[in-house]
Structure formats: C-alpha cells, structure tokens
Length: 300
Ligand SMILES: [Zn+2]
Image (cartoon, rainbow, N blue to C red; front, side, top):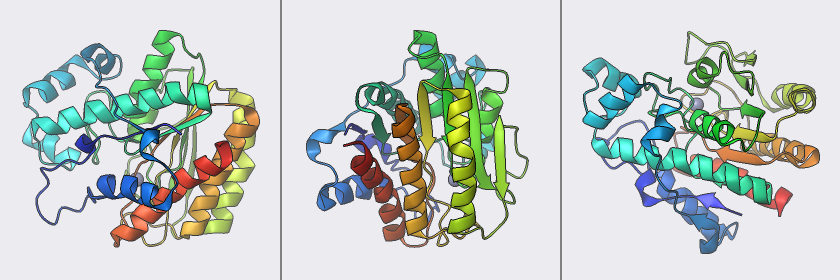
C-alpha cells in the first residue's frame, strides 16, 4: 500500500501549547509500523508542487504573498499558524503527496497521505490550518492531465469543506459531497454539490445510516473515475473541535464502508487525513491508524 509521508509534514515552528497536534505526523507512521499495518517499503516521499500546479487552483496574488512572505497579519491569523517559509514548503509537499496518491490509487485501488485534507483553503486565501487546498490541486491536476474526467470528493471531516466547495462551485467535473456538523466551524458555509449538516452529538448509528443511504447512490449517479476521501477523525466524541459523538469504532466502520463502496464500484480512492483534535494524542493517532488498517484490510 503506497503511503505518502515526509518528515517535512511536521511543522516545527509552532509555539509551545499551540492547539494543533503536530506530533501526530510523526507518531502515526510509527504506530502503523509498530502494529504491522505497514512496512517501511510502503512509504514514499512526495515531491513538491510546481508553481504551475499551484496556479491551476490558487490565485497569482495569493501565491505571490506566500512565496514572498507578505501575507497580512490578518491573513496569517486566519491560517491558524505562525508564518514561516517552511510552512509553504511543507504545504507544497503535502499537496503533491495527495496528487501522487491519486496516481497510485489508479494502480492499486487505494493510496493514503499521512496529512492533507486541507479543505478550508480557498483559491485566494488560507484558513483553519490550511494553506494550499490539496484535494482541489490534485483534482485540477488530474483533469488537466486528462487522467480522469469525473471526480467525486467525499469529505467526512466534521467541518465543512468550505474552500473546496467554493473552488469547484462552477466545475461540473468535480462533485463535492460533505457530511459535517451543522453548528460547527465554518459558521458561514459554502454550498457543496451535496451537503448534509448533522446536529450536535450525532452518534454512530444515525451517522452511519445517513452515509449508507447516500453514498452508494451518489457513486452510481456521479460515476466518478476517482474518489478523494477526506477521512477526518474529528467526528469522534473525544474531539475538542468536533461536537459529534461518534465512537472510535463507529469512525472505523465509516471508513470501512467508504472503502467497501469504492471497491465495489471499482473506483480508485485517494485518502487525505484531515482533522483530529482529541485531548489525548493517543486517541487521535489510534483513530487515524484505523483508517489505514481499514484500507489495508479491504484492498489488500
Ligand atoms: Zn476538521
């Protein structure tokens, strides 16, 4: 199973006590190796986005500000991270990882990135821990290369993929689907092609019922040649930023169902990890590790 990872994924410029659990990018690969889900050979180091690839999704103005470190204070604050050039470097590698995962998925059915799912990034600005919109960049790249002509984005992170929805607002070749917590960030939602906003404290059974009711028909209708799955684990009850009440087991069943459907319909799936902000780092890592285990079990 091909898994994108590089030590650059861990941004080391965060101040002590910052609420983003950056350590997960080190711990997750270690955990996957320790459990035997992956071996060292499964990992690949992603390359880096070219400017041309960035500019297929992001505006010239935004890219210029990132490149020259001239974002305004407010723009920096909106990203949720202190600015340093390595943040841009990191983002270029992560987003390229998602793109490479898509190509690997075409060969092997599935491929996963140990980061990404930066769905709050808009064409012209970063937001909510997202600088580049990796899935949007990868989608635009696949379409540009003529590798596919219909894509489905299944965004099950607890937060709505506002940036992605906006970027593909007028792009019929990319269908954006999001299940999220309605009364959660971003409070001002964009319109995806299909949005399902769940009430606070939704737990396993109603969540899974909605997913099972909708996803198979959606795949049948959209008929994608590639699915991007954003597998955020901030749906679980222990999450600080989630507001839903799923168990870790329910989250795993969610992932399994998505992979089973991709498998059944024969559609390659590239996975970007998305959020996970449980109080205990071990809960975050265990929940993300389940996604990788589910992929391994179902596809290999
Ligand atoms: Zn999230």
